[in-house]
View 1: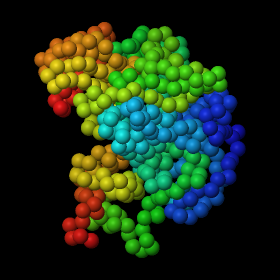
View 2 (view 1 turned 120 degrees about the vertical axis):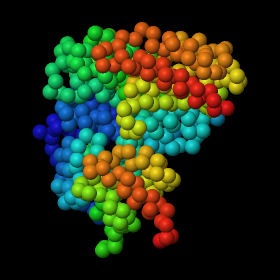
View 3 (view 1 turned 60 degrees about the horizontal axis):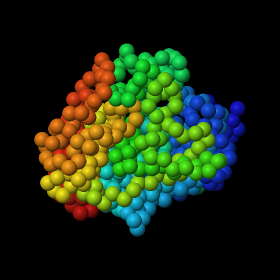
View 4 (view 1 turned 90 degrees about the vertical axis):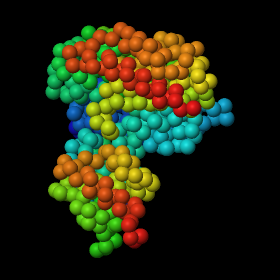
Length: 333
Length: 159
């Protein structure tokens, strides 16, 4: 690991004054460190200076407000949010997605904002010895296009990158219309989490709209009482536990029992960013809450998919996962 | 070249003053500077769980944490489990249930199990498996590991 100096700012303002950038930069933020340390060990990043912004420096609070909205401090630990009684009661989708993530040791270290900003698990990105990765070395090519791409995206990719976004939490939050609070030296802004993630296009090294030196300070989820009882995070993977998703489906339904008033759906494991399915949501709205309707609506879930040599199975799997998640969510009255 | 930092770590109730580079992981600092070699280093990538220790009572991967990040926290390692010559109930159960073969992963398994029991996550064999998912055993002693933990969670003879 490249040697570095460590700064320990007291608060967000002091952290912002130190001006950290993304992994390639000379100064980099570190919170829980569970994603950053492996990248530093592999020398995917070689920063000269780390700025520690975990609990203590940034807000780690977890609050369900009187209006039913959820506010999560950027430095809240995955484990603390997953086991928070208010979260599991009012936002079970968030708790399910967190408990399906990683292992207890990782969840005890990793922060929510760090989870949202984790880098892709694409093995070509994480292997600094491999030559072609446009995310790691812009312009070097994408080894996954013709290489081993079973785990890669079928949606949202480009000729420059087909790496998936690996966060389960982000999929659940996108389905729930979550927003982020961002802070820079110029002030604060708020934007939907869905708009936070960029498609790779021809600049896959730029994954989010976060400006250099800008910090996520909080995650806000609007009240969702109608969805709380009928939601499901289904995660399909190569083994039953402690693995990233091949396909995941975050589903929340507002129904009167027989008919769907509103549906919220996002998929993970299959796209270059958390993949909201507004077309499927519209197809379900106003229709019956039954398996036949779910199967018809799920047919368009993979519209626009570009399967590669080893990952074509995801096209069918994502439709089936979506139907199963809808059946589970819809049946829970 | 990064300079070394003088930090104080509290491990198993004892204070260790060490001089370390910021890039040294907690696992390396525990083994090389505190000379507590019970914590094992397997994959060094946060996959295998051999390096699991408790920080403020929560199991973490000491290979994914810098030693300097553990300053001011209460660290517990496998060396802190036994009371003199009297083994911790989990240590005894691992022996009685033959829950190890080579033993390399065992310190991490037991530290995770200590937390699992204190957090009340031993309700069933499935729950034990799920909350032990971050500890790999390449000898494949999983069945006996689950049995050892279950035995401590609900001892058959009430001890």
